[in-house]
Length: 196
Length: 173
Image 1 (cartoon, rainbow over the protein chains, first blue to last red):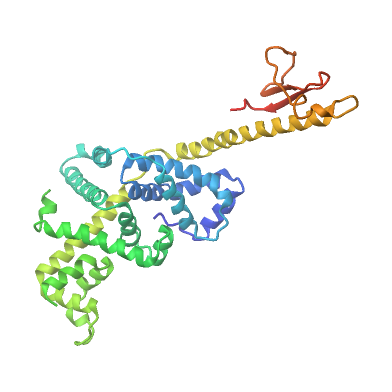
Image 2: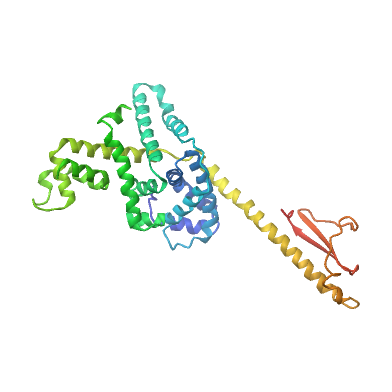
């Protein structure tokens, strides 16, 4: 998550945005846009759906900020907004092709500069495969639990609140997700994932 | 702990716990005899290179996944996204309000007819039938100057002296 340098800044910006300050809203979008996209991607499993869900979530954020009274943390409220937006976006089933395109575009500008860039490209492709396997191997709930707790380091109690489930349920999703991904990894011969 | 139970632990344990178990060395561990699972894991990893390698692979995959997700972001630019969020918000609310406004206008028109029609000489016995407003688009075509951006609804009753012109904003979508 793009953590704000000053924790006070988020409530301040939210308050300004609620009162109609468009620059405050723009700053909030700048701070949370990548995070919103990530949450949407993990939820939908598809980059195009995630793109649509991100825009829909920003729209709902703009509309819903007037009703946000600060009872929950802003991130918790925003996560619910993103999940609802993602639920309303249909799947397109083009995830593998689009993910390859996106990861390729991240390294494309450096390819012409020589061997180090090629190594970087191979590294990026390898990471892209890990992400694709994560999106394809796990159901949405398990992906969300793993992303929040294992990858973003959010505490289990807070993650459960964000997902609207009990901590014990979150733990079940988390353990199943870890078992699936790690089980697949360890079934491969050592070094096989690097060679792919 | 044997390799089988270690593998089971590695499949489910928090990445932070695996990381600290891997980095711990035997002298760093608690006194022998402690039954903490993390210590057990650390002891085994310190002595079994195969399990330690499995633990390293799990952590590397975890790190790759975190890096891969952090690398992604929306393709739409910031300004474009903000503009879309704020611009698209406005028309939606207008569309939502318009049918309600039309319904309110119709209801107010009906009330106005009943109120105005209940004057001297008005036959109140016909209020349920004859005084009900009737749209006369074909038979009755009055000339009305409608302000720009507004629409007009014309209603008449059985009392031909009573005609209601109701101006409202929007097109009644």
